[in-house]
Length: 151
Ligand SMILES: [Zn+2]
Image 1 (tube, rainbow, N blue to C red):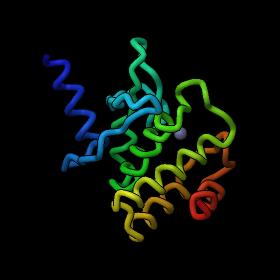
Image 2 (image 1 turned 90 degrees about the horizontal axis):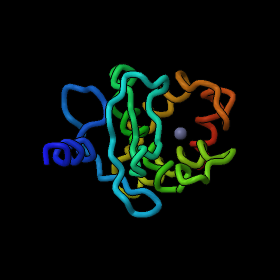
Image 3 (image 1 turned 90 degrees about the vertical axis):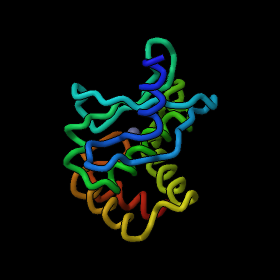
Image 4 (image 1 turned 45 degrees about the vertical axis):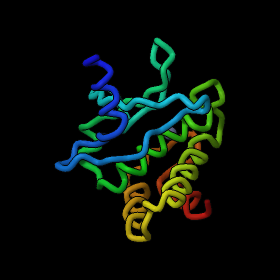
């Protein structure tokens, strides 16, 4: 029971290490299973979406990394990681273009639920521009933001 409450609270409330707890809508994977978010200081990136050994969809996020990011950017990554589950990327459907697709899904989802203001988008775009590492879908943050602007 304790374990259940712990997981439920994390899924609803916390992604980031900010003074005030952020509250985001529950994320569901492509099979409509709710995704649980867990802090993990050992991962080398801000966060990763994967399936736990028991098969349940999870996102592991690094509080040491999110602590240095603007809350708007942390919020964006909540949806970016959710996208990997919602779009089936974690179910064997990961491909070149999947990272850009996850960014786009995050942006569109935030717009559709009314949480992406122009001011927030400016902050997110600036942090992605400055801090994105080269990845499968972009050589640098400038290209990443260009994709996101055109999404
Ligand atoms: Zn990703």
